[in-house]
Image 1 (cartoon, helix red, strand yellow):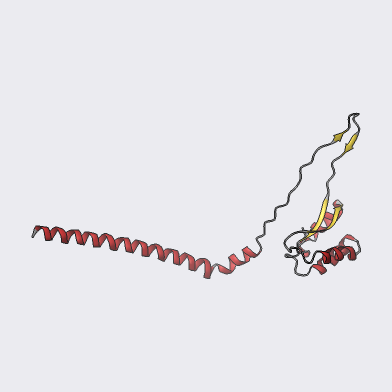
Image 2: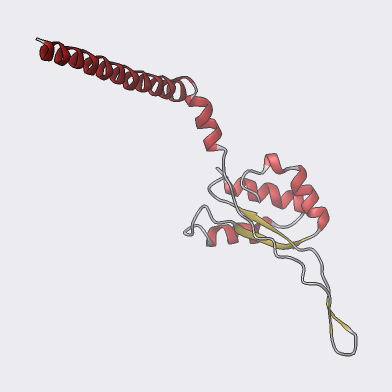
Length: 154
C-alpha cells in the first residue's frame, strides 16, 4: 500500500511539473505571437517606410597625401579638393528630368550628361554613374541647395 501511495504522489508531482512546463512554453509562444502581431500588423507600414528610405552607401574618401616636392624643393604635387557629380539610377524615378534640371542649375548643356546616362543604361542601377567630374565649390553648393529636388544625385 505504501508503494502505491508513493507512486501516486510521484505521478501527481510529475504531472504538475509537466503541466507547469507546458504552461510556460505556451505563455512564451503567446508573447512571441503577440509581438509578431504588433510588429507586422500594427507597426508594419511604419517599418516598411523606414526600410524603403534606408539606404547605406559607402563612399571611399581618399586621404590627402600631402605636398610632394622634388629633390630641389620645388613643389610638384599640391592638394586640392575634387568633387564629382553622380546619379544612382535606382533612386531616381525619372533620371532624364533630373539631368535636365541639373544642366539648368549648372549652366551646362544637357546633351553630354544625357549621353552619359544613355551609355550606362545596361549597367547596374545601384552603382553611381559619374555625370561630371571636378565640380567647383559653387556648383557643389548649388547642387546641395537643391538636393531634395534632385532624387538620386550623390
